[in-house]
Image (tube, rainbow, N blue to C red; front, side, top):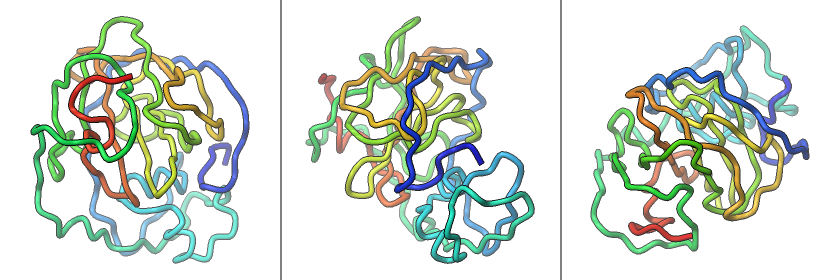
Length: 224
């Protein structure tokens, strides 16, 4: 598999990748992890983990996978049950004090707030303008770049320290590639269209595989 699937293996490169221009289908949400999952065409260890709110390292350990780049269609993977299913649905559009010195990935109004447990609300959505640049909220390494995650359109996922991941969905163009080291505020892409044909960015943060309120890290007010 050509995609980078793990934390410790990187391909250092830079590129510009254009999305096909189609509107992104709105299918966000974390599926309940089955006891056993059959690998399908286009799956990667990272995309499977993201879909079910799990950590790639957990799936690796549970299945004795030494090389995370070598999973194959039809392979049976045992998955860990998702503890997030027992969590209460939580909505947050109230002011919060950020616990990290992250910056906003896009300048604009929040048009959808975080609401854990609600489809399409595992992050926030920020309205954009044509050709507006999307920037990295914090430094890290690109763990995923592509359109293989249902509902995200062309998406970038950056791995940060302390078990944190940030996702940038609905991109019309990307400027970075899997494995590339990213600095805070670095230009990573261009805002694109969501399913409702509006320009916006879906911004999501996960801690140890579970969605958390992005405003805990970027705050309520725009800062850059």
